[in-house]
Length: 391
Image (cartoon, rainbow, N blue to C red; front, side, top):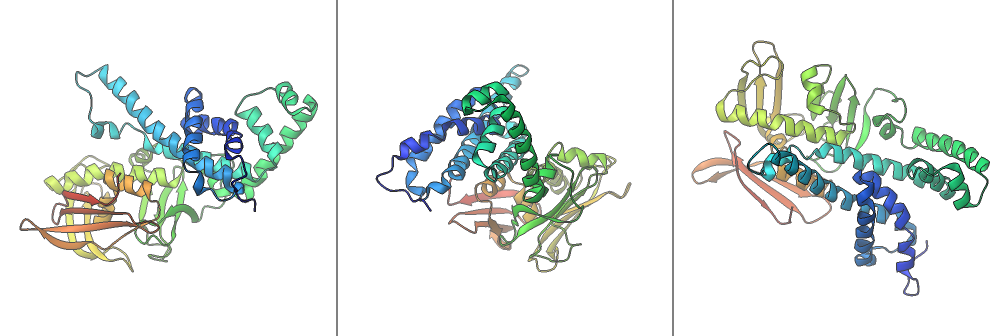
């Protein structure tokens, strides 16, 4: 392993990453115009935090991770600015951050982030020259002649190597990264059974979720540790139903889809708890609302409150636990994005100003970070949020 030492010119080595980072930023942010500035911001951030890098072998994934975070932050600001501009054309007052939240298209950012990571992982498994040639041609859109001149080889050789490179890349995707590649339509899907996702279970924080996401069929997630029974699901949606398919939109991977699912159901449950009525997603008629306390939602889970919605007219039904509703809060979603490996402690019944309330705590498994959410026991209306970190 090549270690960093005082004699090495770190700045020179880092500057050599710039062309690759510009290409990565253009892809992740979706803006060639902003890519140069984002790459420069990445290099500055890497320089300021250079003591965190102990091995030159980790330079590429380390700077790539910094670039992705910077690009995602830029994307959020950019989407908000575009939303404000669009809104101002039709309204007298600017929208609040809360109103813009639904227009930020977070699931699009997450999908782009996941695809960028996938391509990064695939490229790292290719010979350096092959990866460079594919990037030059398919991302930089350089001609065979331009690549030949830059790499000092014949144009005919470029054509042959590009073809071989595509075949090699496809083989990497088919073997090492098949499930992720299938999600983006880069190849046909494998079997239709459960597959391990890259999402840590937000309840136990000790196992990665297993999922099924088959377009026009089903979306489902389960934790093999919380409950090994394959019939016990943490989240599930029959997307043969148009009203369910619309909830997931054009998301392609698990975490964006689950984030969108939580955000879509949250207003429905909030209305149901506040007024004891809400429209059925299937037929639009009023649903029945049932709240059960001290209920075990599945084997091995702590007892909690559960809300069930049922339509007597068409039979549509849905249920969510208290922890599921807490996870739908914007603050909880931000905490989960900042600390992907976290756990949810069992809710505690407490008293707030003479009324019963629930305290739910989210804790990072790897860092000293915690989010505490207090809500009313019967309506689950949010009372307070406390955290020891900045979100």
